[in-house]
Length: 230
Image (cartoon, rainbow, N blue to C red):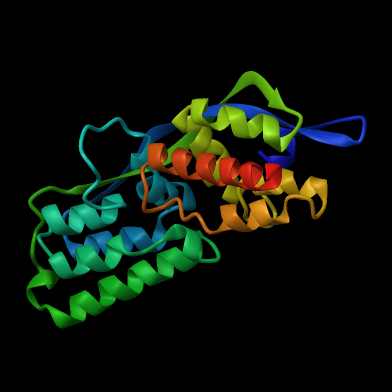
């Protein structure tokens, strides 16, 4: 879905149509019990699967903080018992690369280095196999829309965290300029909201929970309009 579908135009002003979503996990036939098998699957894995294992656990209900930000790092640490590889995979940030293929290349570099550095990793069998999944996103219409950013600012604390995921994270693979839907919408107002756009651009969604991310976005919007009212 193109991000333009989230925007509709009334007269000359676009409004923001709030969507909600669910990320559905779909099983694949790929399994890995050794690091070599893991590497081979990473090489040929489709982008939907890479996307799921980097972002999917953000939407999973949990009662404790995430130890690792992606499933690959968690498997390396707890099933392969390789703390070095786990730390290397954990710092990979999907928002810092051009696309998912660049992320794949970084993963393969780390894995290849570990296979060369540790002879035992050539044959060691993980205590639990990695089961590769892929994602399918289901989008819902909330029938809520905003005609102005100040109207949106008041509502952001009430947005569902899955709406935050859809508009702030998933949007980056739908928009031509790889930005979130908030910034994409604000550009339709010309230079008016450029300071707000720049503040939103500084928020990295990968190392926060969705609840923390929603709070960060709300604070940026509230701060912007508080400054404007002075």
